[in-house]
Image (cartoon, rainbow, N blue to C red; front, side, top):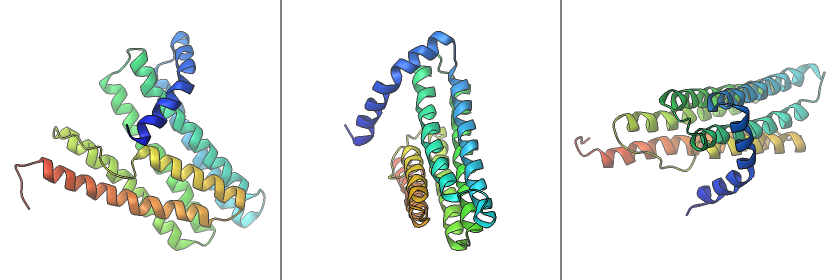
Length: 216
């Protein structure tokens, strides 16, 4: 059992009472998915507000950055709860899987966009570029898996999958805000930019070995 399975079991132990309460209230997995996405939109707003406050000084941009990270972490729990709710409530569906995957991509893009704008407004231009590279890598990791599974090839390998990216982004933002040092957030974006893109090509290599009908 790897560390992700152990962590998942611990989280399920914590959230299962809440899941059972949701089932009694008639809350559907698709609603939970939408709430999680809404949380990421709020996180993006905090990052954009922090970016604006870098110039105006109306509010402390570092406090806003830390709140953005905390909201990403909270929204990430909804990403786990929707799948758990679907399984325990027998509400799994093809549309639900599509809805979840689509909003996951939107969630990552909007939060990383907010961080990218924060760096640009803080005159950290090249770190903004690195954040864009993190956006590209994040999307491609998910795309390669989806395309491979569409071709009947399982593809879950790699170092920087979505849970890891969410945790790195959230913690980097929280620490950067609490220490008033954007280098923590920059380091998080560099880590994602490198490892997410490596993971995307790792998955391509994995699929190449699995798909015996093609050779370079």
